[in-house]
Amino acid sequence: MTQPVKGPASYFPSIEKKYGRPIAQWQDLIRSSPLTKHMELVSWLKTEHGLGHGHANALVAHTLSEDGARS
Image (cartoon, rainbow, N blue to C red; front, side):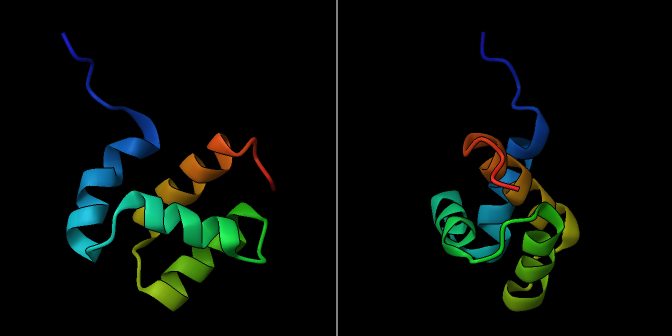
């Protein structure tokens, strides 16, 4: 039986639906940003790309976690 997705990734289906981009594209944007700190990246996604705080936070947290926390 499949376990439900928990943590930041649980937001991914609603992020893709609401903003029309796959998660991989959001992660590429985050990784290509010159910013490195978690909250800087969250603020940038909110300001430049119109994401809500929870969605931006989930994307940044998951991406940085995958990358070994560049911040």
